[in-house]
Amino acid sequence: MVDVARYFTEFLTDESCGKCVPCREGLRQMNRILTKITRGEGKAGDIEILEELSETAIDASLCALGKSAPNPFLSTLRYFRDEYEAHIKEKRCPALSCKSLIAYYIDPDKCQACMICLRKCPAEAIDGGKKKIHVIDQEKCTNCGTCFEVCPSRFGAVTKISGSPVPPRVPEAERNIIRKSKKNE
Image 1: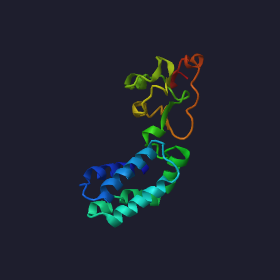
Image 2: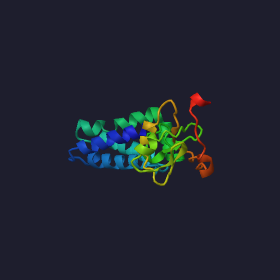
Image 3: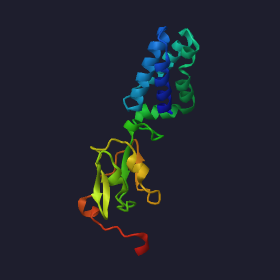
Image 4: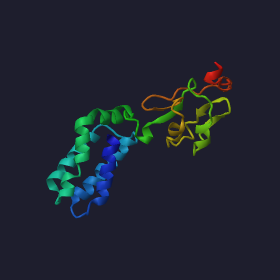
């Protein structure tokens, strides 16, 4: 929900006519702070600043856009405050939607070495081969989510992680294990 509030605030920032300072500058500041929070750069006090900016925009804006622009933030804060706090205090996204706060991981126990994720990865961040467990190089990964999207649901080998470290890389010797199909087991 934090990313939803950021999205709508960004949109409303572009829609502001710019005549009144509370709307024009208040929305810019709200968007800047919300963007930092979704990147894991939020800090203590950001929620209070956002609330203050919202109150000012509601009270002092000249038109309905400025008076209602803080509503996406205020609504999401009212019902999902714990998500804001997780973003700021724990640097994690409970909804697994903030690109900067998530990582992708291929579970070696579920990987069937089908090579779909390896072929589709636009960053060439996946290492592996035929009948060889695949591994995501976190340094190269751009968090685009392609591997997650293309991994066959029957395997479900690619998972999203937020707030905890990515499990250690599987040693090369263990990755060379030939994966047998379910039929041959």
